Image (cartoon, rainbow, N blue to C red; front, side, top):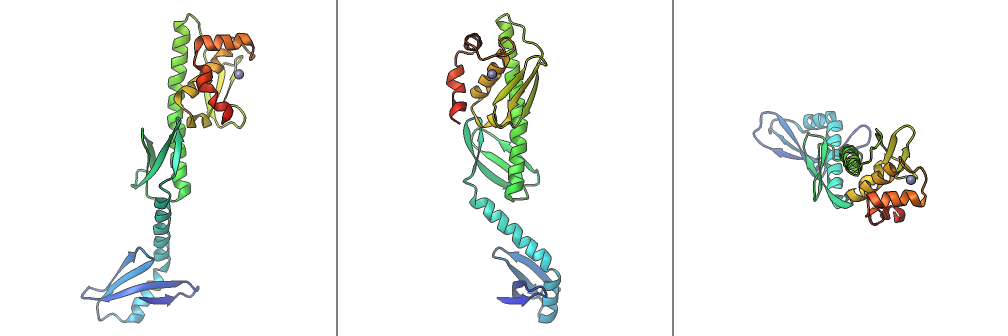
Length: 230
Ligand SMILES: [Zn+2]
């Protein structure tokens, strides 16, 4: 293995193979070494000039390899989704998206950097949670109607909140749901919807409120109490 020192002090390693190629070929080797194949006629000095000229490209490629390796060793990391820990699997692909299924979270990307991977997962999580909230909202409204109650029109807003899992502005017909609920089981998210809808009829946390809530969703404490310990 040979080495050249660049004007800025960086060291670039390369391995030279002489063979009957047209001019010079460069190939990146995993360990951060450039493989050079060159015709016996090409002088070393010229080869090293070419390497120095392309140095930024080579170091950029080494960084990418390093980031990919780091991401792969972190494959034991997981994402919380509806009460499950989904292991993260990174697949090299230009789709730039994350997909959640029953058993894993697959990230399709060309950029294995942690920040990019986390951003793709966050976007999918928010999108899937939004769809789930729309579904649960419809479910609660349908059950209320089936029990002869007419729920007022409600606008659902999903946002990250620090101190509350949900809130209901009954006067404005607004329900806010904490995005962090996406970590918890579906029924726990449902329990928050029932709680907030109950506030349309009872504005405080009185006994009457809880009687109404438990009448509508008898498993309320079973699923909602996990939020108190979390
Ligand atoms: Zn409340």
